[in-house]
Amino acid sequence: MNEEAIKQSAGILALTRVRNQKIDALPEEYRPADEAEAYEVQERLHSLLDEAGYGKRVGYKIGCTTPVMQRFLGISNPCAGGVFNTSTNYIATTVEFEKYSHPGVECEIAAFIGQDLVPGGGPFNRESVAPAVSALFGAIEIVDDRWTDYKAVDTPSLIADDFFASGIVLSQPTPAKDAPDLANAIGFMTINGQRIGQGTTGDILGHPYEALAWLANSLAARGKHLQEGEVVMLGSVVETQWVIPGDEIEIEIEGISGALVKFE
Image (cartoon, rainbow, N blue to C red; front, side, top):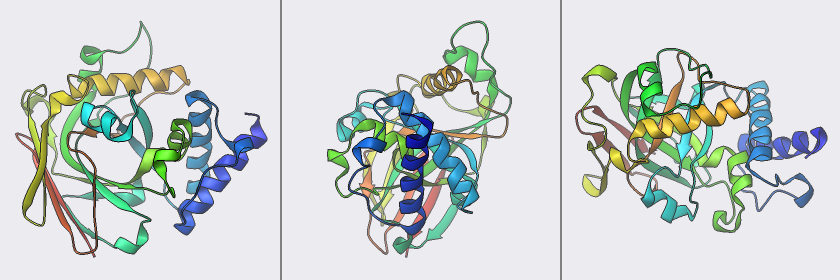
């Protein structure tokens, strides 16, 4: 894609996001051909959303890091999107159902980055990213299906549009040094008091820090790095649940903490 095509693609996605409109597909001439082009469009999208007052990016979400989500979306590798300050909530919150196109929720673990992860000395791995994590959260990701039929949309287009990212609810923080064994911690979700699914944090690429290392390496390949103060949603241990008005969703990562959101 040339610079004009990247600009046009991001502009279409920004406009539909701000107007809360569904989109069938990006026009072919503005459609990223691969993941590298998709992240270029995504970066421009973040700038446009900031200029439009939608919010500033304060972190990232990583999707498709567990078998349950890879099966659900039919995508075999992780994909990243942005997290914005205007859609970051804490512990318990109420949101308006009508502000979304087709909202869903996921049960996640999130990391707070306590120091920059600057590339150097080879690729990042689970061990090398761990010292940068100062706190962990149980978290709800609010996803939004902004497509008429997302199953018919190519993966680069989904990435360009932040891979369904729409909002997060973070629990109280737990210092990383006090966290349970992240290869085996159980996470579960209830909707309106009924447990509807659970998984373990080890489902996330074997260990959640593997997902963090993937993101750090992905950013490094694009000349970027994770920065102190950013939040990273590491992946869902429960299949996405689509919600309706009145639904109250609660998640908990055992040994860390829980969060709640209600759709009105």
